[in-house]
Image (cartoon, rainbow, N blue to C red; front, side, top):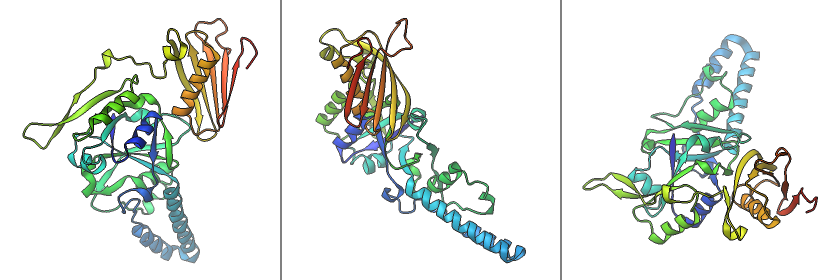
Length: 339
């Protein structure tokens, strides 16, 4: 399934987030709907009081304590989590107007599964928004549904029917702020009707070689509806991003490499294995390390990268390593036992 994010109003910020393979999940207080996280617990209160009448003072106090604990749980969840709002369509005229700076911005297409599950150490919840006439209710029957999934969906999964044109799908994260993602989840970018030509060229230049399809939004003849046409040919492009050390770096032929992310724990560490086509110089190891640090792993205090040589007999032993502690980089080439 693909989903879409409309962007506009801060071109450089939005482009940098694409370059850095990350999205920003704001907290609920920063969203544009003041009714976010509204849950009707009146039924629970009424039911609790009814049950307490039958079961005496002791049970009554237990129900009251449960209600307090539940409301505290709601508040804790609301304060900590982040929410990334997406849509199931790139063609809605109101979304282009409201969220893409009156068609001067652009729209991003993501692979939803890859986007929501890029890193296993990051807890995320992904679900479509339900549009209803009334806020969701929480009653006695929901008491057993105290798992994070059920509570998060109650808090973040409902909006008024007036918002249904957005066709919203949400990714709710365990913390608000910046979240990294697998670069492969970025599929396409759609340019708005009124987007400046110079900004389109900047996007194409700074995101080149990433296997991204670019489209131009067009208005259908004698219609309020939109469509999109391709403006680049992926078959004719070189897809070398995170796959190749370019010739301008090697000063010779490009060197191919394959990257696999093993672990990424926010603000603590990231561990990466890289399979190299052949041995490279120390300066080229530094180039790869800086590229990953700047565009994928900017948050963790430590970044460990192990380099292996393809088809080498002792391929289970790292030929070289690079290790960041904060911004300090250490390079070790095990062939020579020197840094």
